[in-house]
Length: 330
Image (cartoon, rainbow, N blue to C red; front, side, top):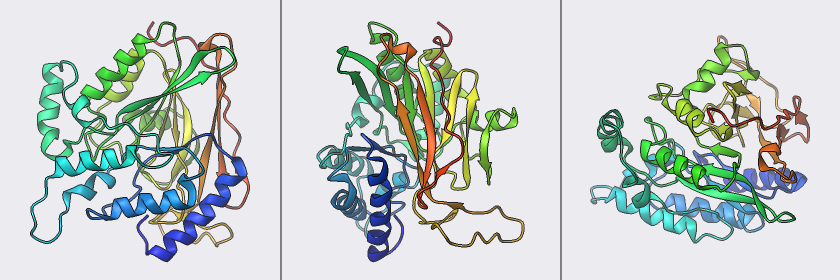
């Protein structure tokens, strides 16, 4: 949302029309929502989004790396308590109409015991990536059977160091609290290294228009998800010109579609796709439509599908139906 007000409004109205076509039960914003805007602007952008879309559709939010920059910039020379501003904004989101968001900074920051290697990572990360909010869980229930059907984990991949170890420990604990196995899906902003491994292994379908920006993830995120056993799919954003998906070692990794034409990598429907020499084509903007099955007697038999909906009212590519297999590592 990095353009002038009247452009934000016109683009959000177009997004509203796309959303009305599919009438989703939940909108998941996977980050870079207010993008480096200074202290007060994030609230204004959330209020604008709510007035056009959020007032009629439940939504949630995973922090992007540029969103995490917003509260590190004060006004002129005035001092800024970055941690306090992050926490205040978390409570603002949790009190916003139809926004399903749970403040978690203090809880996750002090959760569990870290290994020596994890402590070393967080000591390095803390000065730059010391915000631990944006890690929480939503639960989907099968009302007819009065049982949980899915766990949805919203995770903060921060600016560079990806999901904090404390959040992964909490997530594993939550999964093991379920009285019976329940499949889980995760939403976060930065792709993890498994996206790159998936592409290199030739297991992906879709478009790769730029490098996979997994930054400082060395593979620990995928290994943690495998250890938990219940993670079926992960949805990420960040890379504007990548839109591919596939299954790697039992977990499906899916890029979200670049939504709206803000910043690089996306164009409106009907615009000519002009490619600068040596660079990849931009993508027509759209969104991912994720359908989670909830009707099976056993939650582990529920399936899901993913397709791409575009500004031009087309559905892009082949829907990607995937059965939920046996838990990994259990």
